[in-house]
Length: 351
Image 1: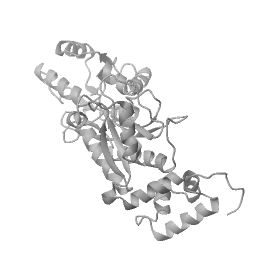
Image 2: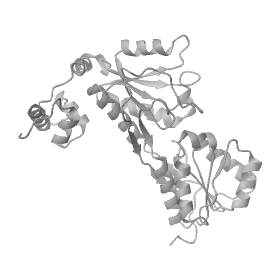
Image 3: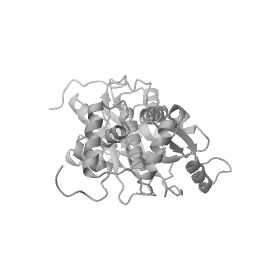
Image 4: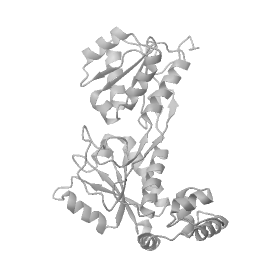
C-alpha cells in the first residue's frame, strides 16, 4: 500500500479502503464467524497497511462482549420518556416491533439492548447517567418523545446516541427516521397513477410538529405545481366530527391522506357514520400503516430503520465517538405502498 499514511486512521478509513461497511470492518477485526475468513484476512491486512490502531476503550469493550454471557457483555440502552414504564409499547405496536428488530440486530453484533425509563421514580437524570455507565452502556437509542416534548435535559457527554424520528430537537443528536417526505410522495404518486383527481391531506398540529412538518411540506410542494388537483391541507389542533365533515364537504376529494392509525380509524368512522361509501366515494390512506392492520397506504420499513439505528450507534461506540456530535446527521428510511381495504382505483387513470 503506497502513499502517505493518514495520522490516526479510523475504522471508517479502513472501510473505505476495503470498500465495505464499517460494521463489516468491526466484525472482521474481531474475527467474527459471520465474515468469511478470506474477507477477514483482507481487511486485517488493509488495516495494518493504513496503520489503524484500535481505541483502548474499544478493545476493552470487545473483550467484555466476547466474555459476556448471552451477548450481555456490552449493552445498548433504549431510553424511553413516558408517563409509565412500557407505555410506548402499549400505545404503538410499531414502536414495539421496532424495539424487537433493534434487539435482534444488536444481538447479531454482540450487544444486548435494554430499556431504561427516564422517568423512573426516585431516579434523577444524573443518577440515571451513573446507572448507565455502571451497567456498561455507552450507546443509547432514544425512543421518540411523547406529545409536544422536544427537549431532554440529559448529559450525553460519555455516550454515543441516536434519536429515533424527529421528536427530539435539543440537543442536536444523530437521528434515524422513516422518510416522511418520501412517504407523502409515494402516496401521492400512487393515487395519481390509479386515477384519483382531487387529493386532500388532513392532520393535527401536534402530529405535524412531531414530524417536523415534513409531510405537510412535501404536500404543499406538490400543491404549488397543481393547486386544482391538490386541495388545501386541513391541519387542526383538535378535530371534531362536525368540523371534519364540514371541511371535507367543501373540498370534495376523491382521496384523503392522513398521517397515521388514529386519524385513519377516527376519520373512517366519521365518514361512514355520515353515509360516505369507502372506498367507492373516497380512498382513505395513511402515511404510516400500523402492523397487523388492513390499512391502505405506506408500510414503513421498520427493519431498515432498526438496522440503521443500531449500526449507527454501534459504529459510534466502537470508534469511541461519544457526546453530542459537532454536526449531526439524519438517516432516512423509505417505506413501501400497500393497497388496503379503504383504497380503490378510479376509472380514469392519471395521464
